Length: 119
Image (cartoon, rainbow, N blue to C red):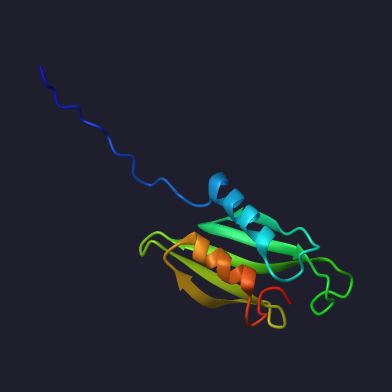
């Protein structure tokens, strides 16, 4: 006998942040090009992840305190990842780029060709 099974779909589950992607970002940052001698922190925030790191250059914090490096936000509607950089002078987040895959956002953050993240 074949019987159909009804499954109830749970609406409203929040996919991000989650521990799996937080760890993927953390591991991915180990291959960055700049400031490899500091250990960045990846914190879960609403719909994404905040990357912080001790400031080694003295450009942002002369005392070497913890600074915000990047914000990776997952847009559930468009199923894309948005990467933001911190404008430390104004204290604002600026949109940098959008990616279909989280790994592409991490790769951009790691190479930082314009030196806008790892300052």
